[in-house]
Image 1: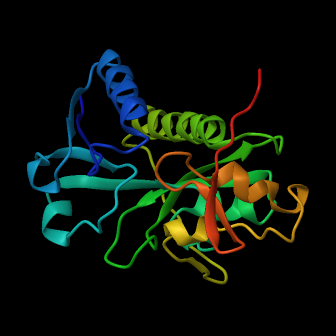
Image 2: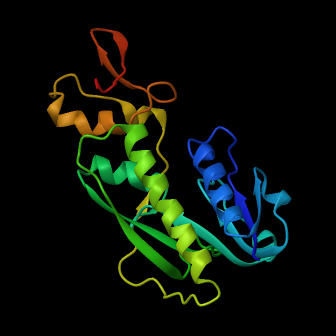
Length: 213
């Protein structure tokens, strides 16, 4: 039996329902699992997963577990930083690598254990591609736990690139461009938290997008 922590440090995170599902699956494998929302509540154990976390976890907290793992939707060391899935969709990519790696002092720089590719069709809106991202996170986490302790990491190699944190202003559209030209931006906006908008003739207009099924 492994002692496993799952930290999701934002209670309103889109990943929270998926995190609870992952915790239950890990318990069914015979592990002791705690899901926490604050890093100070992480218990001593074998593995700590930091999933959809907004803060960098300190070394003192990481010392409580043998392995401290992050799952990040980029082919590291390319695409370190924030919102990698959204940035890559905006770049027009439909094949995105998710990496499971060891947390380290420097952001997204630790040893890589497992990777897998997330395949998109190019029509998924935010809830749809997030579900695919969550499924990849679950598969990678389960793969690590099932292989433990026979896991070997490899150092990251290659050119490092960094994605900055996205802000609501990044949802701004250009009224002079077509919808087709800006469709990938519409795919990554959140209708409630950071909706698409444009400014025209002295006013700001919000745009909300839903897929008709």
